[in-house]
Image (cartoon, rainbow, N blue to C red; front, side, top):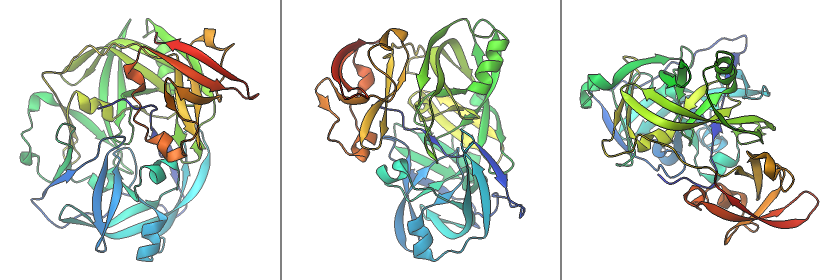
Length: 394
């Protein structure tokens, strides 16, 4: 998988509170038994699959960290009426009220899932630029077994674990959220001390591992970490309310991380304002992940040929798009503070000009930022001054 110019993080809902008409999202499903669906999947930025609703084809983000959701296009075409309303809160505590609909029928492959609770999808840069009409969330998947295979560009869904050649030595317990069936697994961090952390398996996150600030401060208090690689400040995530506010950010390098039987060294971890620590689809470069919602088991079978040492140098600057501008999202090296600031516009990196790109071109740009050891950044600061700065990885 290529590392793209920026992380495209979908922080859809950090916490939920339901109004007086309490509902559950774990209803509906399929009447078919013995199904085994193989969905072609685009893993380029985030996993997107084709579905069929009322005889029409649509593109849906496949997001295990989210609730099944539908956009205004589907709501209007099906003339759906809301069945309830939910108060939702994003990772920064900003609240909104969204309608809940009952989706009469949605086909994945040739299998119909009926009467699925679906949240009103907020329109934003992610769904507009990646051109998806809705989200397949864990509440739809809760009675299935789901396998992600990056080399095959597929997602498989079945109702029987025997449909897959699952090896029990790779199995571990998976906790399933009682309200929306989000899947959580336990991971071991081994540094100065050993820490267990519960992680959301979030296929709607394009990164590797994000550690919540809640867990980060707890582990710091217990002297788990031997080395905080870098401390910075900036905004690197999107919530349903838009780009997040500036906050303190940390980069850590963990000597060893264990997922089930798999052990990885020198794993770089970023902190996030999201309530949950999470692993994203970059892990799919290292093995096949299978989520058995029915039996609450998670399998991660590593590819034998992939490296277990994940050490890599990083640039002390992280870009993020804001509207039709590419901006400095975070600065990780204090020595850059007298040269650039968070929010400055990045006009170009080496010979790639971003000044005339629209916001969707910026979101899906395939400039391979992390493959270079040094880049020439052309920056316009908030006063309109233009400067060129050579920045090396650290």
